[in-house]
Image (cartoon, one colour):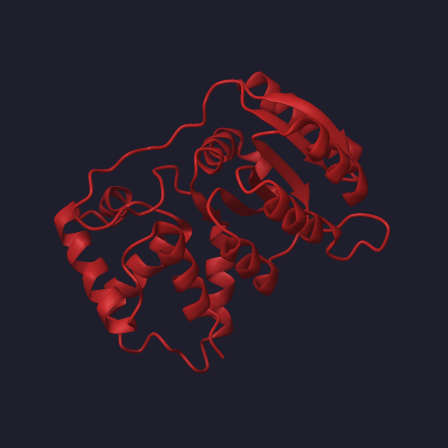
Length: 236
């Protein structure tokens, strides 16, 4: 379940829940017309303005260059090769229009692509298409990403942890710190973590400081925190 309380602030920072401004313009790209139309309808009903749709990367880039949307939602695999055309288009959009928020949708967890996406900057998200069916959570996540947050699908975190079972780099952490780390990587704020594990927010702040100290991770920029957590979990 995607936590809808925001990306973790630095310890001691008041918790805020970023919201996208009303009427944010969106361009959608997916060769599955039914899914694309369904997402467009959902966004329209939720206060977004869908200003264009595309079925491949070339059409997507032309649309973005023409209408300059606040948000682009793109399937990771599109024609002609059904490889990573969507991701390549997302890279070009980020280079040409760094202020445009980007959400990449995927059917499966693809670790390397997700890490590369988060590395691209703020206002980025990597979500599984199955999340779209959780309507309220999906819209809340879209709003947060449009407003500047970086979000990765919780399934990615679980996949990374499972993939590292045999050579666990998290042995330095206590079981509770592992739990907090997983929630941090999902994008949960300190306040949300506190509610999820039934402790005070000050206790969570202590866990966060301990985790960052033990793993030698940066504590400043929130995007770098998410990226650092992902890179650590994906370390070989």
